[in-house]
Length: 103
Image (tube, rainbow, N blue to C red):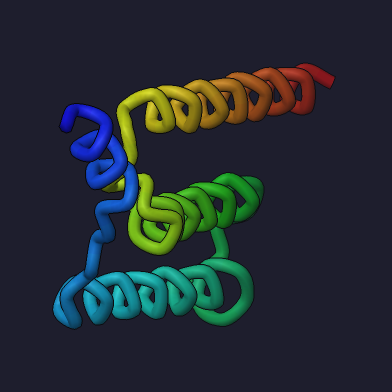
């Protein structure tokens, strides 16, 4: 009996509502518009343009990973692994920025 419940828990499907999917779609469209605005059209940030583009891209990746890769419903171990990767990314970006600014 215990084995049957483990199998049922592993095969549990998460069906997203249309409201959630539309919210993710609207968020991705908004972030894409922000990327275009920051990169070329109206807003110029100079040397911060690359940092802003990376920040917006990270927000898009978070939305996609949580909703379409179903990390929102997976175990916390996967969240920790993603957090470590993001932490390493931020660390290396800070180190690259420090190196660039001190030349």
